[in-house]
Image (tube, rainbow, N blue to C red):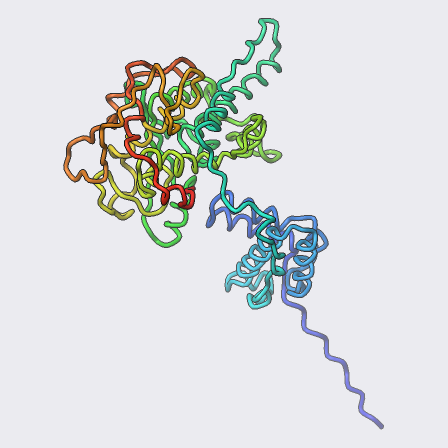
Length: 439
């Protein structure tokens, strides 16, 4: 008689969690370890509609080939950059789920998504793209600042609460865009600026200490194990007047440019969105510049005109390694970008004068396109070499904050102010004009 073997029960599968729960846990981890913008982008792409069918699936059952087909579908829609970001985010998610402390909950092997990638990008012929980055010239800078300063009809006394709130938002957006033009800092830093980061140092001037969380270079340096500090931006009278007006408009908010509503249901109201500044620039008729292009205006247009080096303007643009006021290379451990020197003051004062002159309808230009006018003095014979100074004497230009008088935001340029035109003592060479634009 044949022997009948009893079927042994199959072992229970290892525990796991649904995909949507895994994304929620990873989102919290991203907020702890990544910049806020990066965490938001990764979380958003992991919750795309394309991944909705995985929402309730245990992550241990999801295989790389299935994920790869979804990423390929995103790529096929023409969203090639998003497909690449999705691949990076999913590999990070599986690396997180496969950690030793997580595997007992997820049952995921970290090797599962190893090698995951998006399809190669489509070929783009040379004639299909603009060969150069847009660098705003003086005329375009003037057009931008005049549009932002344009007269707005005052509200009638009969205006209701809603109309007054809408007018306050328009004024907030205008001031934020103007502060970006005058300080050439990134959209995020401007939009999420905190009032306590600004310091009034008298004579109509101030300082803006930008925290590492809002600085791209600081985030990269911190991940490499370097000490980072705040990035200090000098605020000459033109820039400080904007800050003072924004503070009055912000009321009791801790943010310089407070938001109107929360970004998510149930969340607290924080600051305005950085995308609002981009949308405002798009409304300027005849303007091709984006907010980020203003950094190129300082780094290329003004740098060449004023005779500065790329390293000099890096003091303001917060680009990697810098030089201090005496021209000596310093590390983040020594300098930490927490002080501001004479050279930074000279650059920012000259740039603000340049913007003021470009926006002045009465200003004229010399044959080389440099601003001159009734409020400005041309001193091309004065040679200024900030890089050769290695002593404690001040450079022969208006670099000290204590020398800067007050300035009205919308009024004419103060006739007593010496202009950045004093810096324009050399012609840009062919080599300068052929150089890559500095962002």
